[in-house]
Length: 426
Ligand SMILES: *Cc1c(COP(=O)(O)O)cnc(C)c1O
Image (cartoon, rainbow, N blue to C red; front, top):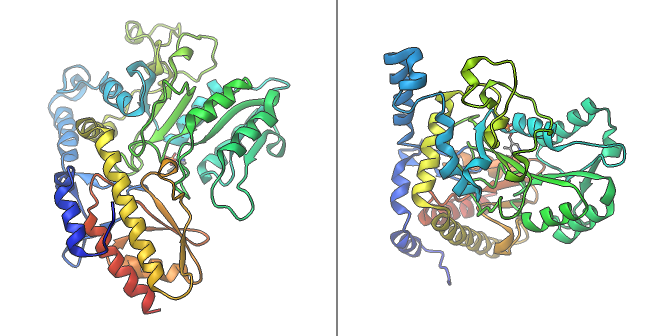
């Protein structure tokens, strides 16, 4: 499609947008009496209006039934998390038994490493991406430290080539082959949080398995953003947070995927708790630990229902729309944003900024990371003051996520006008 940088053209795209009514399902912060232009759904998704109802339901059941809510609430609490298995499984390309929700992302990655990082004398190395999300870096460092390995020896980072912003798949596969027999675990982000690059998870999983390693993914930026086929790709395990593209609210619960081929392996080490216990025996207070066969067998504590309620609202909303429609709009609105950025770049003298996200649609999703030359931070502050919510990442990157659920094409056009004014006045 040939785009035009005009209000009329943007409005035409909005009129044809099959998801346009969903914008009204979200609550936008206001700036001078208007909805802000929200580009940070990759950091904290907007609040869906229907979420309050899900939370109120739990509050009311708690008020009216107290402890009896565990079994008699509108949605009983003791197995509330099981409501996620089917719709969330569909979103993640997983069987219901391969999905569970609990804790938060970094906590879950630590717990999953207990089971899936099983180093031996000769096979103990971990491959991750260079400049992984800080929490993942600290997780690797502290896990390795706890297990008695030296980070410089056991942690292998896949690097970008000199002068390139993204990591090449061929370099990932080459590194996996090079570490080979010493490789215990590959654990990388399915979508890089900084550049928005989408990795070929199937190819990485195949390469890891070929050398005898376990392969897991941090899907913080992938859940609710890209098409996932975790079961068919044979991924061993994965975890994600729900407050980014999945709009479940600040710091909210995480999800886990554990491939079914691991479910019956009772020799896998795990840190257990009563919510993993065989449901028939859970309340018998039986001393014998007999975990559920399935991802729920990795549960630990009884679940924070007030935190699951907004997540359930969101998962049901995603199930209602389906990833295909979201992806279709995602690709078009991201391409439109890219077009507008290029238009502005062409209209100004010199190189003010550079898009570091891959331009190839197969390798990106709903994010454009823009590297600013010169005084980037002041431009970021100018945007925030003008009702454009973005985020700043050191040393000089602004990330823009035109989330298909609630961003409009008109937002992209308006943003372009604001940006142009900001750049020409500098
Ligand atoms: C956002 C994000 C996290 C956040 O971890 P929490 O444990 O939820 O605080 C972890 N990893 C990646 C790649 C992220 O983008």
